[in-house]
Length: 247
Ligand SMILES: Cc1cc2nc3c(=O)[nH]c(=O)nc-3n(C[C@H](O)[C@H](O)[C@H](O)COP(=O)(O)O)c2cc1C
Ligand SMILES: Nc1ccn([C@@H]2O[C@H](COP(=O)(O)OP(=O)(O)O)[C@@H](O)[C@H]2O)c(=O)n1
Ligand SMILES: [Mg+2]
Image (tube, protein in one colour):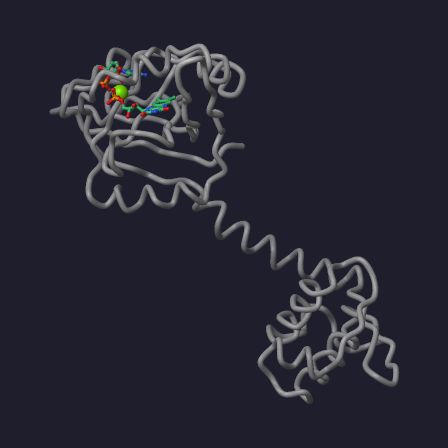
């Protein structure tokens, strides 16, 4: 039995294990030369060789040395070690998989209502969002920081509403992200919820049409209800939008 265990290999060995999994996958042998591995790890050949030896001693890889290199397999224990790293990263990033945007209600050009009502879009909303949206988009003028923050939405997986065409023209696609809309009670005169503090509507979506007349500073929201009525909003009312990655 080896005295080295998976938990006792260091970060350098784990990085080596990751490089092996990236280049050869986890299913089967791969021919590895220490000099090529060294180059990938930005280390000397001796260092790469020593790390492989440690990984073998910890039963994270199996090796067969041949004249022109070695055959290396990541073991089940090796895969588990990588899974633990993966789980850590998921914890780090999944907790962050929500974007909070702040802004105030504004009136737009009155076109949202028309686009939402078109059957080519409406069918898809019902299918893919599971509801028939109120006819219109609630427009939000974003604060400066939120204009920057909304860029993070591009790393989210959207619900895609496909483009389509009729006899006269083509219509562009639009991307939807689940969102909760929250309004602070108090001076704004917004609707008070049961606890008297905030009113919140959970089942809305941020919608970003690919073709739009608005810039990055305007956010559009759709929902099964008229949010102005539901949350007692008027132009200028401040609100927070919690956008989450779809599950
Ligand atoms: C589902 C959807 C699809 C849209 N498709 C188009 C389009 O194909 N071409 C276009 O010029 N604008 C399109 N728009 C954008 C509207 O022209 C407009 O910029 C936007 O919805 C804001 O309207 P509002 O100011 O009335 O709220 C679309 C909007 C929505 C909601
Ligand atoms: N879910 C929704 C969608 C739109 N609306 C409002 O419904 C009206 C029609 O939407 P629109 O997109 O055609 O109009 P504007 O956003 O251009 O003003 C606007 O006053 C929106 O703010 C709402 O209260 N709740
Ligand atoms: Mg609108």
